[in-house]
Image (cartoon, rainbow, N blue to C red):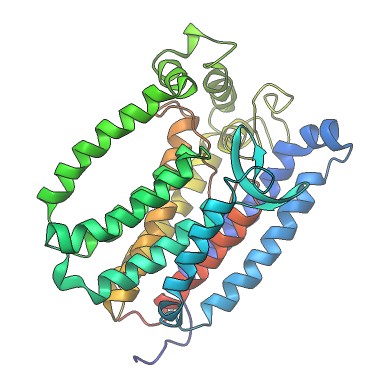
Length: 365
């Protein structure tokens, strides 16, 4: 193996820690009023965020110092465990329903989302699989269908919860790995058309998804129903202007904007910190993605390159969808903003994944 560099990518590490720090501050600002109404404690969500942030940072520094090829040995076992958890969460009495989806395993307010584990589990396994069988990826049946079958099975189990947002992130990140490994564009585009037809079918099969599409096209058709979140999000962003209303001065967090500390935290950021604050956060994400892709390009082996590509793709897809929903470019879906939104297992696993990416950067050529 190539001797490790003395330090990981400093720019990537600093961007991660800055985004995490901003997230802790903004979670408190966005959630204090809601936390007091729900739990009688202004600091409820802040304390949870600090807890999982600390756990995540510890995990990040551990994985940052564990040679990334070690994960290749456990990728298959990890994927099997992830599938078991995805099946278990669907069983009544075991899986916990929150926000209309049976996507949690846990007790009371603490729990894990198996779909979050599946994202990194699938990225690890496909990176291993495709790095070992790269000569087959141009073949449709022997090369392309097996990884797509695994992704399709995981996506189907996630949709049974249902959790379309997480499913889309999983598919987006894994397709990026498959494309990078050398899959033929003709095969991917043909399957993409079939996937698009299936996606339309999923939307049509669930009335609430169809309502989100119509609300996206014209939220004012149902301003107190399906279009409510989109309208309130824009009401938060608009008054922010260039410099914002000031930290802690949001008006929309007073029970107007749903989920201000999770899915729509960027709306509160734009309202309180304005265009400048929102742009600064987007610049940090762009720097993080750029350094991550640089790591993928300069990784010393195919496994490291594909693994870095998948992790960066997971982050990029999630950021694009979350910001797109907040500013009205995409229909509303339950996607959090990485490192910023209030989170439990999702935040810890994101930091763990970034630790793996930082470790790969230590071996970059």
